[in-house]
Length: 186
Image 1 (spheres, rainbow, N blue to C red):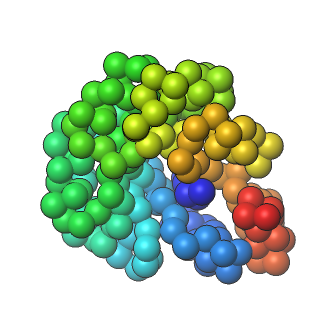
Image 2: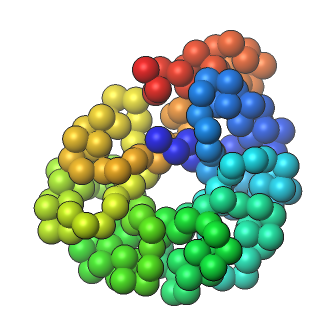
């Protein structure tokens, strides 16, 4: 399970990362839509970069220490760039053609996005056609459905801000944030 953080500020993101680490998560994805995302990558060990939309951004993320790169779409050459730098590449696709293209371009894993649009049944159908392609549904994955995606053939799931108790995070209630996140690992 990969926590995908898309929060309103760098400060909230740092607090969320600390809470997720305490809860037991070993890696997090910091999306490029997060304010000061590149600086956060530099300060965060075992973090990946999400919502990478071009090769220049991919390079900047690698230079900042990203352990993996995630894009919601196929960015030709991103997988090779990541792998040459010792990173993993999760390249996005939704349709069979997009998923196949991402895999052929070298993706280590294909991010099925937005997962909620097709649900576990869509993932199950994709997995039946492409059992050799590791799939990671993201976008709409929650505590109530992540097991359904795993049962449908996902090798892992990306869980967005649902993994963080937003009110507790804003209020500085670390114990509540950690407890909420631990539910996903139980």
